[in-house]
Length: 555
Image (cartoon, rainbow, N blue to C red; front, side, top):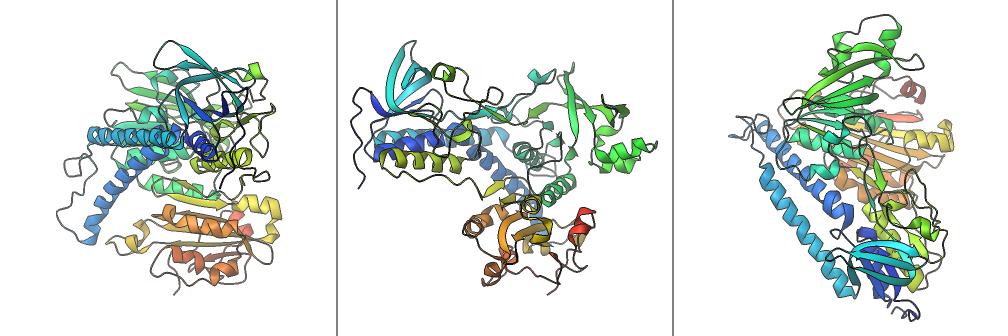
């Protein structure tokens, strides 16, 4: 049984939590469960980004898009009377965008109510308003239901205010929306530009396209650049096949609003493939313009150079009725009063500096979640919030959150699942000679049975990255249908330090896609083993861009 916390004494509360997102609510409830007198301050809807404009409504839309894709697949299973056209076309399934939004909003509102009930049931005092630190351990709250303010003090103060989407910084950006605005759209746009190749932009682009919108995806680098390179390339290829015009290595010059209400993006593209043709003094053939990165956007492009003489292409793409900017996130520290208390934070990013115990430089003041920028994921904030409450009010002094080997999923189409180090990260850390990589590329049974050409069947890709002679598994990376539901258990294995032989010793569940992770070769003695007819790729061959083996596996 938890020991009761000491009396607040000269303070109103033992624990004042600013922010009612996942981390703040979890920490407040855990602290109250340990006997602390707790206050939580929140001026917006409870649940933070995840519940309101992130994980939950995003996953709803991912599920809707996946349902449409399943309808498309049904005819290939010899099921009749299935609409085979594109969504919202005369011969395709209709998408009830307005009805979906209404149902989704109601679902989110119910979760807001659940959070309020959980706080009340835990004995947490909920103050609806916006908190500002006016002095150490002192928070002034501007109440949302009146013009009044209220001041509360706490022996311990937690800052868990979360983050928000970064807005476009180019001329005309005021005509665009962010990922928050996606959930406010009353009707489905027909032609969409997504600016940003991170996981949010990739997810939004996939949802729009699966639901029938025309989509162009612009990014300053390759898409999903922080993920394993094989994953990035395969998602790019999958998006190209589903009709998304991906345009990496592109800067947005400006966004123009047209007289008919549509928008035009003026861009500068520095894709290496284009530069190679320009440097050689050649005209760019249509196959390169349209094939890399599969965008018709470049039909009227003109050669340009940057300030350093680097060649590229400049052009514009018009006709968009929605432009969504997903270029990263920033924190919500404006007006929080960090300077008044002397709390250290990065002025550019807004991220608050903390140590491994979530402590800021000011005693009694803590921060966690998106506002510290270590891993902007709901489960991480939950773990950090509960760990902090245990340390403060249960006396578990040495406990910290391990920010390594965090399982991560991108709800793209198909989804991505990853845990641990990428191949490059592993080679940088352990040396290329000490890294073994196993891969498998295959059509799982869902697509394998379909009546379509083998080369047209979507492929699942899996990679296991190992280090040392014992082949300890330091990374697992996958893309393909249902990989998002496969990763959790393998994340446990990586966290526990499993080896390749540990995976090999597990009896496979057949027939499933996940069995590939416990049945991979080595089909030879190479340091880079890649399953499939066509042999193995050495590390040097991978670096040189050698093609993958064929996708047919040996029995």
